[in-house]
Image 1: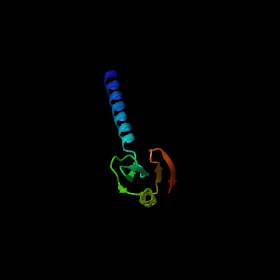
Image 2: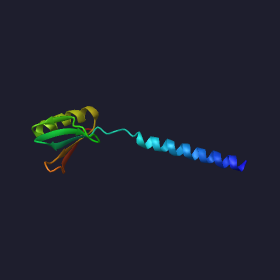
Image 3: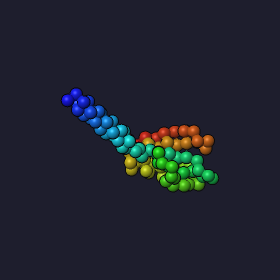
Length: 93
């Protein structure tokens, strides 16, 4: 009886660990928009994405697009300098 109980407890622990792990991985992604330097211009990139959302010649145009998306998804715009460091953050919560 003791062996069955310990086996059952181990099974419950394993299932709990798997369930907890899957909960951590399914967090909602953010919709924060980053205005970043890109080749000879600027780009808008959603936080966590490798792909560029849109490319622009001027930072002001990229910023306009990022603000539009941030308003739509109630998120933030993170503006980067030409060297990649963060210059400013605008929240649309």
